[in-house]
Image 1 (tube, one colour):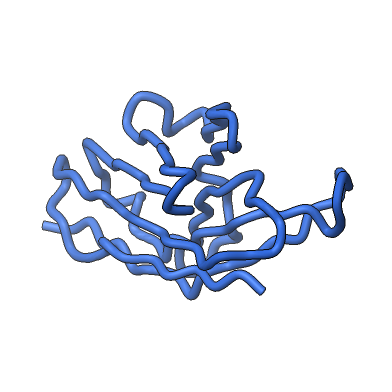
Image 2 (tube, rainbow, N blue to C red):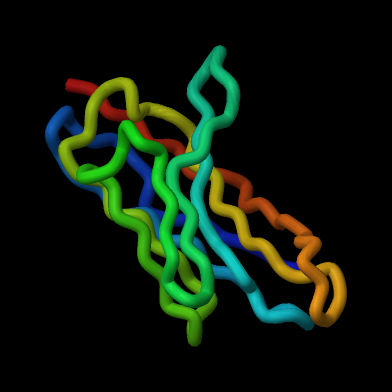
Length: 122
């Protein structure tokens, strides 16, 4: 079982920056990917960014250039640097981590954090 703890959320003015962190506990299998989704009130959950253990990243197209994901594999920690924040970025941001279901499997088990609130407002 992987436990994920997010931090770094809060209130920021439009145009400001915020850095989120998500630390994962040790697990039997190495974590293959970590990333972030977000969910705003009344909207469905959407992908923000994902990073694999080899450093490959995937971003929502609309967020490229403003958001940057990175990770420290040794610490099982993923970061999300958010710049030029807009009111529409307001959401609960959820960290996730993916591990193999068994050795060598391409199937993944996904774990979720409890979420951290990001509010962008004047």
